[in-house]
Amino acid sequence: MASSISNGTPSGKPVEVSFPLPKAGPTNVHLQLTNNNANLLIFLTTTTGESSTSTPLGSFVYAMPNRTNPSDPLSTPLYTHSGNLDFTTRLAKLLARKAGKPVYVGNSISFASAGMGGTVEEEMEGFRRCVEVVTRLLEREKETTT
Image (cartoon, rainbow, N blue to C red; front, side, top):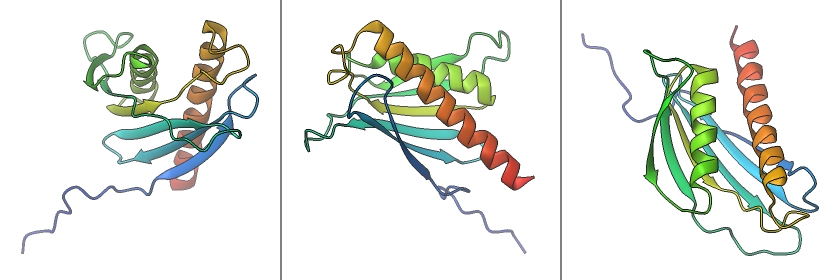
């Protein structure tokens, strides 16, 4: 008898967390991580305490480890928004390298309401914080499955 294959059903449930952007006042990042064993699916957005408006759709990038040059993952934008394409691409490539598997990243984070209006330093701190949170979630998931 043939075994049943559940096509399109993720093996893991999405993990949703929220955390404040460093030095950005009431701005929070909302992150959803789904580990499908074969790949990671990550969505990021921001909200502020002062506004109930939603952030517009941002970029969506696919990245995968590069077997010939592990320090330089491959990536391609699937949907682009010029305001955050670079951030999304860098995040997808870094996470693909760290996780060693393909990563899809959807990002609509906005630094406009950050303390200094979205400077490079604020963006880099936000980037580091996102990487820390995703890495910690993956490590926690790995510990619970072993």
